[in-house]
Image (cartoon, rainbow over all chains, first blue to last red; front, side, top):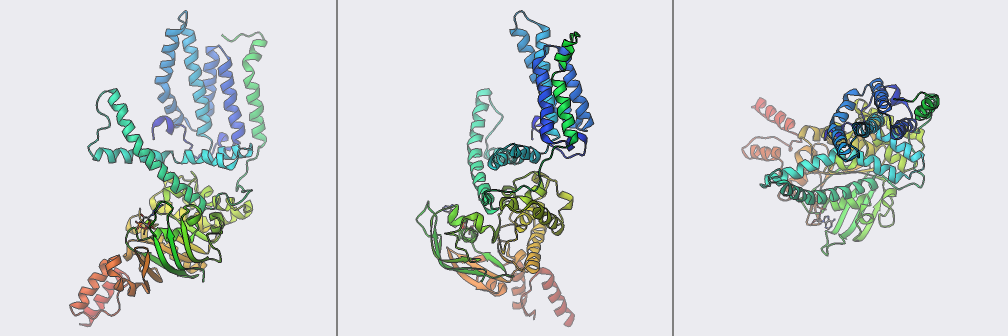
Length: 248
Length: 278
Ligand SMILES: Nc1ncnc2c1ncn2[C@@H]1O[C@H](COP(=O)(O)OP(=O)(O)OP(=O)(O)O)[C@@H](O)[C@H]1O
Ligand SMILES: [Mg+2]
């Protein structure tokens, strides 16, 4: 798997963030997003990134989180450059704000995905009224990412063993090469998805109008505390301003 | 009889050739049946009839008498067939849907609407029986081929089927893992008195475990009965496992080895016995 995806992958650990209900954790990430979107202050953006850092550190996920941020650094720089070139008049502060905002939002959502099992996420969807078929589609698409990555390698290797050179020629030639890779890959995946559909039927998928769930999500006291704290945090820049302490 | 097919013929919707022709087949509870035959002879097709994927999923024309735990797949949807028949496919990758073994085991029971308390009980039991404690929260990409197939079998067995059908369950495994899987299935036959149909190309791996062998060729059953007799009879169709070849040559060379051996170890023991006598 490529490193940016890896960094969104859940690994099991036993920390405070892991023990939270995915819904309250999602709300926490959303509130960080809202703060980041609605502020024009670079300091506040840095504060968002800083608090996310502390949360991730508390969840012992720095080792996966930092590489995510490293992986998106080129994008951050690109956003910086584009905003610097196209803002009128060119403003260093504006470009910094935009790129930091992107960094802050990625950081917050990476924290969410790193500490939430896909299964809990699907549960949260189901308990919010999303039908089982859709939540399953979501869990399964995450589950099959490594399989797909392997298939890309298999098909690529099969093509190369027939003398096909994937990474050769100019950019247009290479883009065309990937189209050649794509066609057999799609055939391969369609076949795989048919086999998966068969296997689903054999496990009685669709048998009951009311499928049960072995696990159910429950909001606990700590979840309500996180909800309240997130809500408060969402309005913190406004509160600070209202108190007459303009953030720099 | 747990499952019985009499005079069954089948044609896939996309072709006008009959893939199965006038097939008789049966399995009883507590019986481990090996289904063998050359590639394309119709083994998988027969297996799909047993769990109702044919005709429910594949369509086509299906004729003859079929009774599987009293059900006819032509009038029973696959998910209802799943109550009687568990199915394990060749590639475990395509039958594991979750990034967590525990959830994988629970899935079939959830689909059937089983009460969560009961699901938890059965999942724990399966984790114990199959020795999955250490990998209960692993994702398939973190499991070996043998472990994946073990989880696939467990996730079907928690639904407590009466018949278990395995279509080349060991094709992607090394011989040692393959033998472990076939042995695990044997244990289930003995403990739970289920009927099993296994499709397996490597006869020498399966023969020591099975009670009966059925050989197909070109959509027909051409031999059936005691595995060692059938291997002798239908050697041309299914190929002769190496140990039989060695055994036959030794007998031809004048060694009195008695009945055909089931395993290389048994052959070795027989040879030792003969040499000891001489
Ligand atoms: N979905 C399908 N549509 C049309 N024809 C099919 C389909 N699946 C299999 N067949 C044909 O039916 C025949 C029997 O195939 P089947 O898969 O049952 O053989 P098999 O004994 O399982 O072979 P193998 O050992 O290679 O798995 C073959 O000729 C095959 O081409
Ligand atoms: Mg087959």
